[in-house]
Length: 132
Picture 1: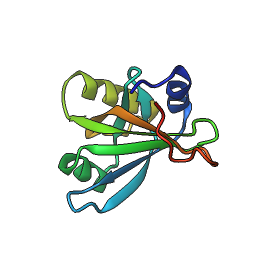
Picture 2: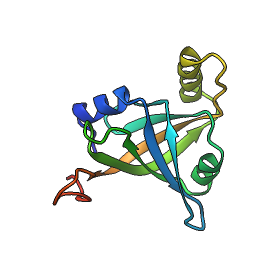
Picture 3: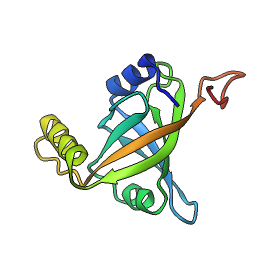
Picture 4: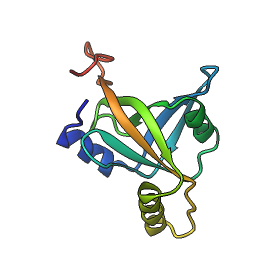
């Protein structure tokens, strides 16, 4: 699934995205993430700074979903599988970005969400509809 330029801009400009995960027992968890941006039109980088339960969930079950905090500007839910990078280029880029925002941050990983599905979260008759 391809993110439109509008979708990518909304993720980039959002102060917060909400990341939803589950563990192996399907216990849900949702957390706000302050550092998220598209890497390309299919992949979103999330910096794992304070994640604990979420990080454990992603390691157990690599499926996740995100929405931006202001759904009036980006009324979509993005779902897909994640890859966690604890070293290498993606991790180094995540650390550099995080430290440029707040020097005392110490990221534990770069989480790459590969978007497979996009759904509308726009109130009304199309809420929950899969975007083709």
